[in-house]
Amino acid sequence: MALVQELLSVGLTDKEAEVYLAALQLGYASVQEIAAKANINRTTAYTHIKNLISRGLINAIEKNTKVYYLAERPEKLKYLQEQQEKEIERRRELLDKIMPKLESIYNLAKDKPSVRYYSYENKSDLELVRNEIAELRCDEMYNIFNHELYGDYLNRDHVKRLVDSVQKFKALYISKNKVLDHRLHSFMDNEKFKLKFLPEAKFSFLCEVLIAENNVYIAGKGDWLVITDKLFAQTLGLLFHALWGIAEDMRFE
Image (cartoon, rainbow, N blue to C red; front, top):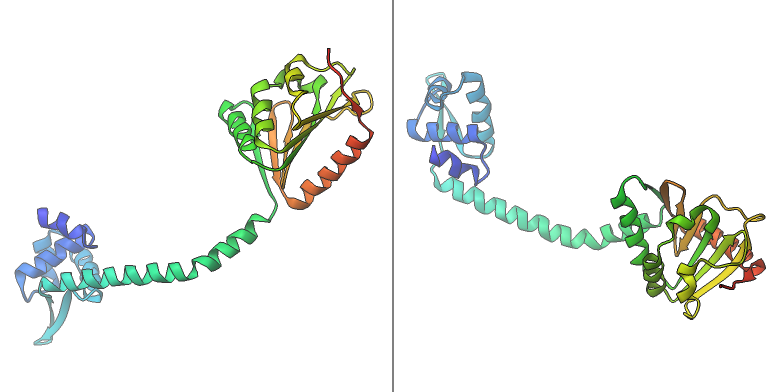
């Protein structure tokens, strides 16, 4: 019935709409009569009648020791709709009022450590992490890169995006010798790109490590681990600077 569908839009369920329309047509009626008119069983009809009574759309009237039900005039639907709109507006105003407090709680929550895992098997994961790193726009970024283990993953375009996104990019280049990978040659004249050498024989890092503000990106052979924690990032930053202090200047051929 078209009217049933229309009543759904004002907040009634389909069965409530059918029961209300049946009561509206019958006038004073018993549960049995309403159930028969709505083509549902008595128990179901009674459940929805109670719901409609609580919403002010049906009244229960006792007459000659029997209980009859009478639908309110259709104008009551308009009144209920207006009340719902007022309630929605009240909730919106309340939400606007408490939003600053909610935001402050959320800001505190952001400082809590978090760990995320991404797999190289999913190409979209690898692209997602690289895009996230390139869009950080932090002042400084530190990288510990073992070329002997991860040289195959070196991506010149990705390095360029990183250098373009920061004020200073420092990298510890771990290799068997001081010969720089040709894909990095063009960055050596960039003032933002600083690189030093560590011998692989003494500093064989098994993971690539990237430190960017409160984020630490740890890459293995097949996955990324992203740790967001200020204290952890600061600790690895201190380790990086300690290694930077003993690292050698780099050359390329």
